[in-house]
Length: 114
Ligand SMILES: [Zn+2]
Image 1 (cartoon, rainbow, N blue to C red):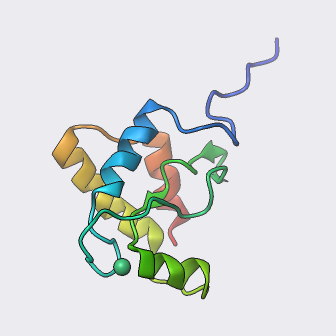
Image 2 (cartoon, protein in one colour):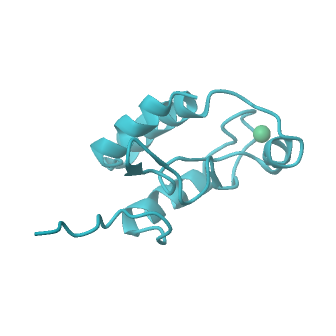
């Protein structure tokens, strides 16, 4: 019997847990320059991004300010290690809210490593 496709298939909309994380990110200071929030919710690798067969696009998001977002999206600058920055933020998210990404998502982002 064929297994059903994962609910976490690429291309879907953010689910409730991911939306909560996005709302939290939006109120966060800029991840790169500490400019006070609200910030943009940047999908680091796009909403459909997957790594190690895990869909992480809607979790792998960071909160840049408008200026830092421009540096990345318009000037193509690399502002830092996004996986590392995400790991720090995700820890804060857990400490503040008691919520976290699914463990396979957390591991896939850590494994992406850049
Ligand atoms: Zn900034």
